Image (cartoon, rainbow, N blue to C red; front, side, top):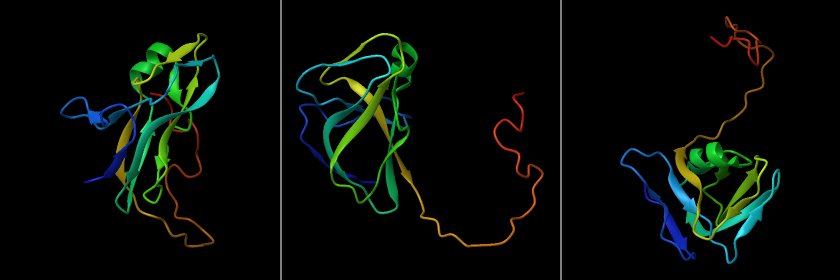
Length: 144
């Protein structure tokens, strides 16, 4: 799959860090460091603009190391970049830790995962088919 991209940042294009990576790390493109206080959220710009093929999305996901070690995650995880969006890619970060976190220019702040999708069409019906699970919801299948 080819993705057309404009890079207005000071940093190299996102890339896969290992041969079997699903996500590409994306970097903050900021003029000054940002202090993210506990429970504060902010939109961090990347300087990237993309044109995705029809029927594809780009998911913006947290980096596991930042989440585990620093409590920094993507608030609307996963964020979705639609194929018809042409604006700058931004990442909504939130600090879920008890300590301030300093976001530096060029820091890898999230990862991008590309996925094919289909649009759904609803068919209005009066009943749904029966299953063993039925209407059992959150936690209904147990934990072990």
